[in-house]
Length: 230
Image (cartoon, rainbow, N blue to C red; front, top):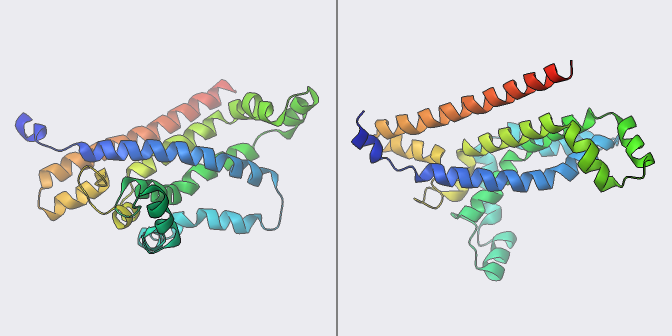
């Protein structure tokens, strides 16, 4: 392994993956927090149905989810045609399409930690906040969010890392267009197909280090948080 070989490696797939992960994580947090808040407070008999639907991407084969997303975002579909006619955006084989597909695929990885954290909040604290004249928004910002900070960090980090490592769904919807939709995981597959094992090793090692760092960060932070409350 020489410096020249490393210098010739194209790292643009990681830049695309980082950008995708960052955008998806922000969008999913804004979407899933209200849903997690609603699920944590409801005792409806329909709750397990919604939880099962929201958790489908965890057990559903990526090829199945990717296929239906490909059909739903194609120019012949209502959604694809709407974006094409209104914004001149083709969702299939585009970065915008990757964002939408990744939001579906990573949805439960953001939702479940948030819901778990919200369900663990002591309701007496919330009622006390209301008694002191705080609004629902103030209670969420100043009472609930600080309490579930470990859950928020876990949700954000896991979602970010999961999006970084996506393969099947992003390949189906985005294809492998250099500097547009060629994310890190797809670049590894492409390198192996081209028998460029050196580049595949470099890409794989980077993702391996990233995955370990994510897990270490979560466990380390959670252990620190538990010690602080002892």
